[in-house]
Image (cartoon, rainbow, N blue to C red; front, side, top):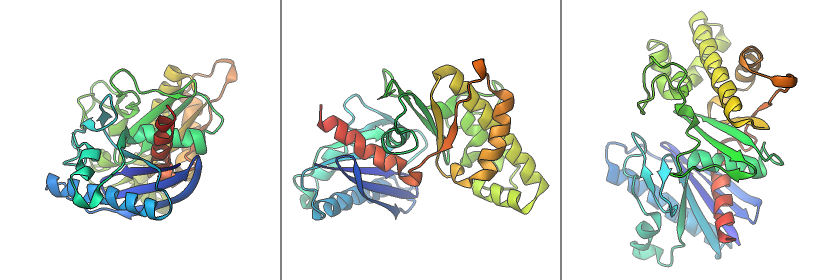
Length: 307
């Protein structure tokens, strides 16, 4: 049986096809930003899912599970996202199976499972990536915002209402500014791409711009970068205290910075971490890169098919 995972974001989608737990293919697809028109935004993404299913079936995956991963909180049946504030206009409340069934060109569409994108990412890394062999993992996805996922005892932690793992919304400053959620001074606000402009008084628009300026030796960029890394270290140390994981995995666009992120982060963690008996929890980069979420989504579909 084949398993299709589709990780849908604001500007792109990642699609992974698995044969059991072997990755057959992973591809990235650019998506237009139609956030000003929720109906059009939804239609573009539904069409992407439709085409991905058709390609998978053409490649031989006639017996197919399909899982879509997006930001937000899923319902109990894993059929739709029930809360998706300020992101991916038009996707909140969408039942993907019904949406494809309504299209005459997509009859006999498979039942589509829905999963939070960061939950999908930690599943992918736990099974086939940097966390393979570990039973207790914390993962942060560092992108426009900061998502997260937790594996405890080898199982994904979803929580009673499936909102567990929103690790970017822990507070580092009770008097700080909120992000899209009311929690003040969140890890997301201190680290997320969406808030770089605010954090640097408009000097830099993204973490990508910021790290490029750091490489050029710009003093203002270096100061802002060090503050961001310090915040990330405090966040990671706090999460380690809460979950006691075997390792912490960092994914998303910010993790792609490589040494300029991980080297100063290690120094900050040496300072702020509580390490009883000298135990150091490794902090590593996601091994599946941008495909952690799509691979994890496919694996989630595989797990549900065996229940």
